[in-house]
Image (tube, rainbow, N blue to C red; front, side):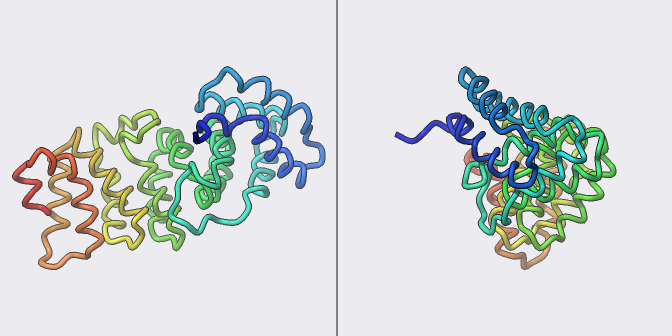
Length: 256
């Protein structure tokens, strides 16, 4: 039987994090951190375990966020070259991402740098959402730059982070009310070569179609307007319309 996901966030993970942190910060109290994690996570489910570990990292790294986040950046290790998400070999970075999400809002520039670096290994799709809410214009400007990055995980984050209804995350009501500010991001990624990015774009459009069907339909029709479109765009459109296709919606069937 496969080990439950929540059980990966336990004493062993605390030991792993401690080893990495003490390699760059000799003052880090490994014993106290490991003991607190081991005791605290036992009755908790996955999300609560991740948050507790993030809170204990904050406590034991010290209250000065700029110094702590520089320490975290030093333990990230090599970038993830694969099209894989957060529940793979880089799962251990979930508390680090949560740390930035919860404690970094007052240090925007440092945190955005950390978000970009974390997503190259793990994902920052949840981490970036509070920054989108509090600094919408500024963050959207950065994401519009990130769509041009060579790193596929950074390009994916530009789209996945703005999804109006990202699973496991608090909804982005501002984009449920009006998704038009995120359309330039989708337009920039409509022919992306990465299947991982394509899936994110399709899922974002799927989110839009739920609450703003006319906006979603207009976007898809524009993408379909040239006589010849890329195979990547065709796949995105079909995946975005999967729910409509299942219902045999005549408009959707014409689009694919």
